[in-house]
Image: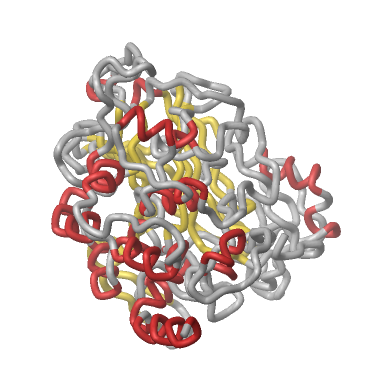
Length: 498
């Protein structure tokens, strides 16, 4: 009888398997550089413009600033020569900030890249060991970029000279050992003045998740015995381990991000909370020349965006995903029903029949967390009256309360963030160490835990507040200073599935 039920349930779920797999990142890899980050059909074919992750947090070692990190290009194979991954010269990359609560960007940081081949008569990416000084001596494929700040219709270029992108971490003959590569990476951290710092280049992908199990009908290895299709329990595996991504990081004083450019008095200051999203845009017309050249014409069209993690992958249905990528956060009320009645909740109830059923409709808790921000009850013991609430406008934004101080050095915060009482973590912004997979799984499954249940009055189911993929940390140690990201894996010596 149990076998018949399994077969029947799996057959019923045939049309939902893609969404289940997308519990973490879209459809399964199809090539060496495909990725679980491919959350929509069209962007799946355009990795250079694919937002993979967005982070926003008060800088732990420089608490009067905020650090934004936007990652692009999913699951980069470190041994990707001879043409290693790079930012697109034809892509407009942006980090957008809403400080008025209407879902529209009030400040945008734009990044435009330029690539030059110094010697076109060789196939070599580099001609000898790449120099750690200015200009990266012996690097043949050189990429630089310019940074612009857009506010009130005025565009200001922030750099006086092109900012370098560090080379790919190729191997010991080209880029030395890890200590030497750190010097290449450090040379790409630029001071733009006014206490603004920037970095863009290849890094270890800081995201951590058990892709292999989740792609297998929503499996969570530590909970295999609870799955409808029974397997023995086992530890989770970080299958993003060993892969790289391309990151754009910028550190900006808090006073440059608030309405009116004023300092804030603390977490309860009305100007303390901002909303952030990253995007990538391409020009409307692309012309392919017979000689191999490409021309791009006409205005920019947004092809990818990312605020809260996993929203397009898990909340938005397949037929709406490309439209969601093209739309702006201010119009996200049109997707409200998918938050209120998430398909993922239904899948959890079917695939894990041994767990208490999570509500499948009326999910205003998810609306609050993901679309408007969380407003704490008055007189709560944290002393914070407003965690991340930006107003009634429903918009997919990563919301950050800039008045809440960091709780730990870089990489050392509680991985469960607010679920564990660490108000400096997700969903208050997102730190590199925050385990957004476990946090969002528990949120959808109504497993908020006793802290949030008591603090916010959210419902809580047990043991739903324990579920997770069993991967609790990144495979590489983060750095203690900006841009905080770990060095990229080396092509010569990398391994996968840590």
